[in-house]
Amino acid sequence: MNQDNLVNQFIKQFNDAFLPGAQALSDEVHGQMRSAIASALKKMDLVSRDEFDTQQAVLMRSREKLEKLEQQLAELEAALHKLTNS
Image (cartoon, rainbow, N blue to C red; front, side):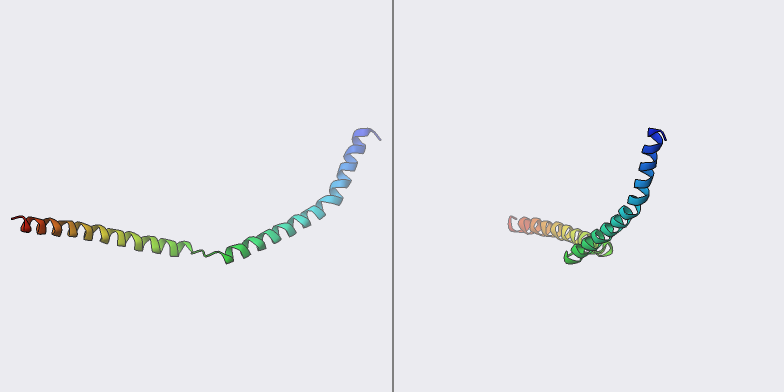
């Protein structure tokens, strides 16, 4: 048996013996990491995307109303200033 065949046979036997165990270990580590991440996320005070979008829309409407009220206040102040200086 030549050296290349011997090396190839060793590599094949090593892979046949090692890879199934490595795959099982990888699956277990993956499952443990998924569980740890899910647990950490549950402890955080997070909102869903829908809740975020809803609150963002409410904020935009509030901001628009505030800008209109600020403009009205400025107009009223200008009118009052004009009346008091006349």
